[in-house]
Image (cartoon, rainbow, N blue to C red; front, top):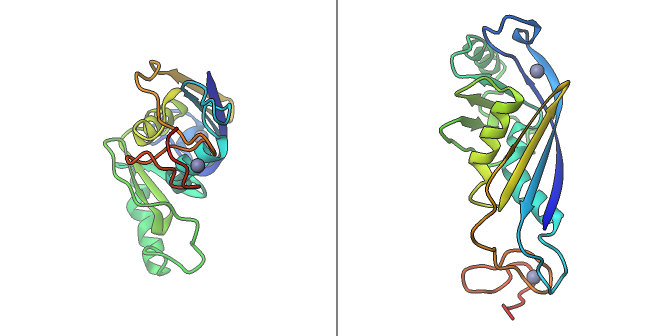
Length: 189
Ligand SMILES: [Zn+2]
Ligand SMILES: [Zn+2]
């Protein structure tokens, strides 16, 4: 069965060199859906608690929220960084607190201190799905991702996971390697 979790992401971007209005800087509320598949954990009668999926994914995905997402070769990038530098907000500001950990993958690099994500490819809805899968595939048994932004939607399905994640019989979250729940301390039955 699947547990399905939704996220809202507010971001600004543009399609550099795209022959259409999306080549101008603009913003969206993007809606991401993550579908996780596993057996039902009989202890709690859930696949996985959605608030736990949310916590795991949001830890990383908050880097896209209230962020600017630009392709690495976009000339806006040095221009915006120069303004941030001049304003002394490039390397952080006391009010910039909702930050995830900096990350760098083949497809994207996050600079949480200035709420910027630099991508290898244009951040279309398809591009976002590739980025999210790369960031989360080791953490969750993802079988489907859907991303909606304005009139655009993309989705991608992935093969069912070969292994089941061992989960706490009391609260449903993933057990650590010792078979103990990091949240409530229950042990594997
Ligand atoms: Zn757009
Ligand atoms: Zn537990």
